[in-house]
Image (cartoon, each protein chain N blue to C red):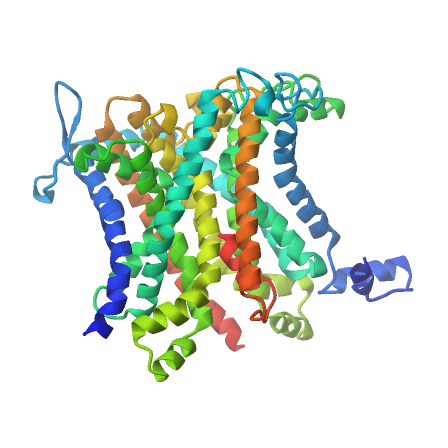
Length: 307
Length: 300
């Protein structure tokens, strides 16, 4: 509140003068923008909170609030997340894909980022180019491409879990590269050069100096990969063979088009809380690891989590 | 020797992965789109040799997209929906990003986190939230009837273009605000002070300094949301049951998940990808120009 008071340059003058000063002050806080920003934030978050609220509804309605109950999580013997096999399988499948994606995409992406940052020979330009492409390709195009390659060319990979994991890793690698490369640029080359001056071979400098310095970026990219994999709909859907390979987003999607129960809100809430928890953990870990090296506030660190 | 091979060999697994599972799949789409169809089973018969490619299906799809063709309306509708959504996203997103970057003060960190938060909430969860609210007896109708804006509940989810556009805006706007914020936050305040010292009104300082300097953010964010919006099929499917609001993505989805003709779907995908590549090239060209202009402002 004090900041608001400070930004009024004409304290003590008549209201008209104050208003004029307020309009003319280029660093003041225009009230229209304040209202707009908070309205936007409410608009973007409150509907989700209402959806969470209805996951605790005591009746089958998702529009009329009755009473608080955990029936849609485990109470209901047929339709709760815990007892409905389709919902339970979806949850398991989502976590399975996200876990496998982290385990495969993070190592590959870290190595690729290191290689691309330091390799300047023939082929490095083209590799860089290929790496950027998955970031700008609409998911439907990637989904069609992967589906066709698994049905027409690599026919030994059937649609289902394996195909889904391969697809998730393909779109995740680039995110890991972008995050790790940002960290590599901010570290600079001086630590490696110091290690080399002290007699370390490039490989030793890499494993003993560079990789420990990259830990925050590796943790952050693991969290980000988990989140984008768990939230992914298009690639999972195109490579799903139905049944147990449907993930939570696919369940939500098909439920919104049928007559859904609050159990859909419940499974969506479980997924949302897990994702936000992982991302927050990654963010906290990043802050702990980079403590003491920050010069300019939240910019760089949010950079890794903003995409 | 080993020194020279260390870095390329670190990149090898990643590059190999992307070649096998990104470049080759693209080629598979080309092979199917320029292939033929088995006359009895209607299964696609891909042709892998580019010299023998059959352009028949791509030409057929082009005909359907041309004026008078059966998909002409869908194509125009897609462009109109995306254009409206983009305009609305900019109209809402720019003031929010501007306020956060310039005036948020001590609240900047919190506001930034609240703006980033929706990015980490699944798209489907956010759509589900609105599907609940927009039901006939949902909160939106009840609120509008309580405030006497409506006298009886409106069927928001019964196939209206405005609902689809609203859902697209809601879904994609967080991806636009972030690059906008980044570009506005980077602007050096001394440029603005200089403009004001030289007698510019707040409005003309905004128009001649802030707006041009944030152009890369506007373009970057616009591309970031336009490309996926052109390929969207799930948003119209969720909030509207009729084919009257379907987009190009829905046609592709239909040919793979409903219809028997992946070849047509592949041809349509190729054309969509080509169109988006043109958009991307235009973006790169305008970024190049914007950076040249910004260079001129910086030199002032």
